[in-house]
Image 1: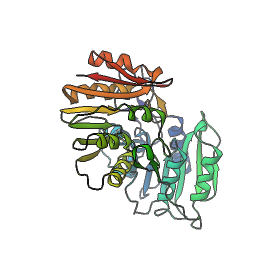
Image 2: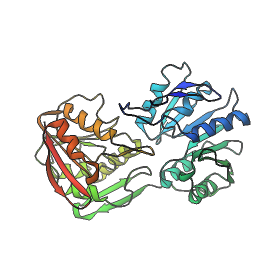
Image 3: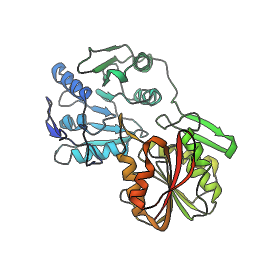
Image 4: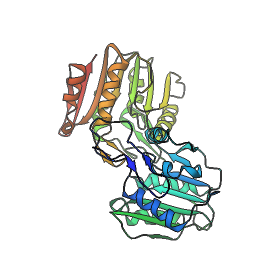
Length: 371
């Protein structure tokens, strides 16, 4: 049975990983959360009036534990903030939620960062921080040892100031940076690149998958997209390249771009405006897959992620496929691409009762099911 009682020096609370999964075996916190909270407690850094900013809190462990300080919870993940809100539901303290692209404009005393998966995203976050930190601000990051490299520490040195690490405890480690107001100004790591074979320009903010070129799965799906529908959802849209090509193939169709990443949806919207400057039929939504949306739609296209934060699993794909069936009109189609070893064929067959293999190569397969 999964452990849900999170005991810590500040406020013990019940924590779950959302969206809930029947076979969930992972806790909603890790050793890095525990180490960071213990450090804060022993060092007496936080005071009643401290202005606290928490970045990348995966399921709300830090936010819930430190809720007495009314922190700002800043994240690129809609699902992470939804998780935090659900875990905060029995706690009376107030939390302010910000997306990763919201402007930071109020000075902060303490910044807590869970180290993200990609260096570009970390660099983006550290650059944005510079507008609200002072030499008195405490900047403390936490992560598992395998997530913290020399390149990680270099980013803190370049963007914040003198940086050191703690000893490892339960394979977790802290990064402690002293703010230096003289650090060199940096540019946010947004990229823009062309897909000449489709006459498209792609915009990628820092936390968007495949930042500089088409990944192989997307390329196979682009070559085998469903046509002649009136409405499409590009689910888990990332930078939006799939939806852009759908719009080219179906100029009159309504395209909806959906992702749980604020940066992904912002990237898709910026890319759409570049590629279809006269277009007005597309909509953009940050959401937990298709939760809360009203059917019907003609076609859903997606390249499902197989990880949530640092954990690998297939529950997001199950959620997407199950919600897609409810969302599609009768006779509507879902078209997906995935690694062959993920066995999406059997999942679609179980949910829809039918599945067709549209295309494949040594690594990926494009599949289609009809409601």
